[in-house]
Image (cartoon, rainbow over all chains, first blue to last red; front, side, top):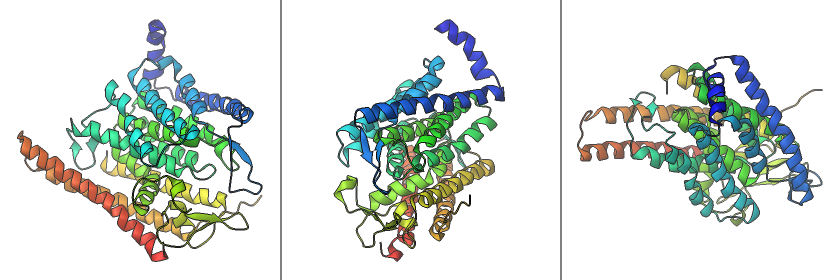
Length: 337
Length: 79
């Protein structure tokens, strides 16, 4: 194994060949699709399906996609599993996946899920794949020896749960996460940071591949396992690549949504414990429910004056994500990060 | 096939708020940089605690701005 790594390492991590990176991207896309299709069949066979409540006839859709997505990551990154950054990236995702899987199968309470999510950053801390000298705009290099790991623990919970709360309609989560990865990838390429370029490219490839099955009309749902895991892995990219502020800016629509919900329902509460923020019209359009005390979600804000079809709603959320990602990239180019 | 997609004005408003919040974050980071420059090179624990404490409070201010943004978008529309 070590000999294989010795041969592959120089080719993979020090080669500056764009072709190699493109091949890796293509491999991520190619690997995830058949795995997802096979996993959909397995889920259907074992009746692991849920209603897609926003469509006529409420079709049953397999859930969760999380384990299949993680398997795709493991296969694409298999030659490098022993490297610390790849191991940290995958282990972070695996912990989030386990928490989400329990939630998918048994259900977790409103406060337990974010509390358990505090464990997500543990592999990154134990493996030491972070730099406690984050480089921030204006401030430059800082020394946050003790605070940084604590912020990582909280940050991982915020990113993964924000991602989980955004998983509301067909294709929304996958399109938003893919878009938010683009500024990271561009910056890693500009920095000639090949390890992070490879990781972000594989992440983008797998998420885009997943988007093809998740887009309207969804063939599979990520479930809590998939959404928590993808959010946690995005966080790992941000931390390992030292793009904390850029990551926050690109992730803004998801953070908005999560923070709006938490503050409007006054704390961490299971979504079944409060009235639905939106409802369906006769034409299967989504419209905001009026009244105080209901959760304020991004979807409710977008549908407050006009009902929107599920497709239009996904497009509007995606546009917000495009805006945030472009904004994040401009901030990097102007002030650095 | 003609692709008809509806982009609502709330999206543009949210974009503006996202941009405003992002700029506010940068402003707060600039303020933090001023705080961190205060007592630069000072190794005393109390100075470090005060410096980090002020930085965290400034960062918390940014999150508080989310509440104001939410009110701006939501409460006026009867949410």
